[in-house]
Amino acid sequence: MPHETATTILRWRDATGLGLEHAVFEDRGDHEGVSFDSVVIAPPEDGYAFAYSVRCDRSWRVREASILLVGAPEPLELRCDGLGHWWDADGGVLDALAGCIDVDIVATPLTNTLPIRRLRLRERHSETIRVAYIDLPTLTVRADEQRYTRIGLRSYRFESLATGFTRNIEVDDAGFVLDYPGLFTREQ
Image (tube, rainbow, N blue to C red; front, side, top):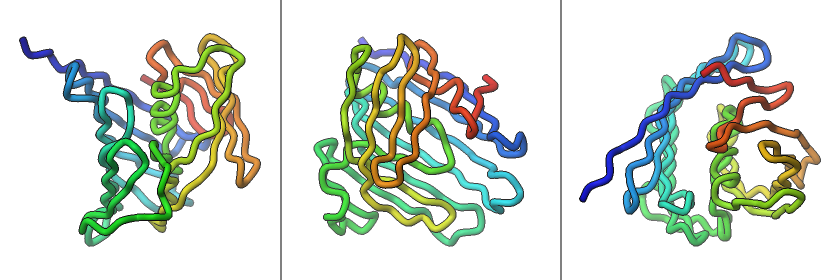
């Protein structure tokens, strides 16, 4: 018996109040996995907008990610086997991303949900992970070591180990960010 697709609409404002993200999350069933399709309009001083899609398996491991900057000739497309092996759109192996399971797109809090859901940390437990970090508007991709620590029922400490950047983020029951202090606040 086929599983119905469950759809959730999510929106965030950035800290300036001028940037906006509108995302559609779909849980496509027991064997189909989950997906995000989103549009981000960065604040005017950043000067860019983009659309992106992320497809994950049932264990919240990234299988595909695509980002298209408005005005760019073609999207950045990445593929992953869910075990830490990555390829570009032409099938070229991306050795620098070996061991990464998640993506972290700099201009959105939505990609923080991926490791939160995948890791299923118990309170006062943490895990260090490697992610495929995507910078905007350059669309450069590099591996980044990050640590997630569950500090409460619905709160996590996020740390980028390379830069020392740390934030305590609040999430809803589904693991979607509600408040990312100084960066993003959920509207819907």
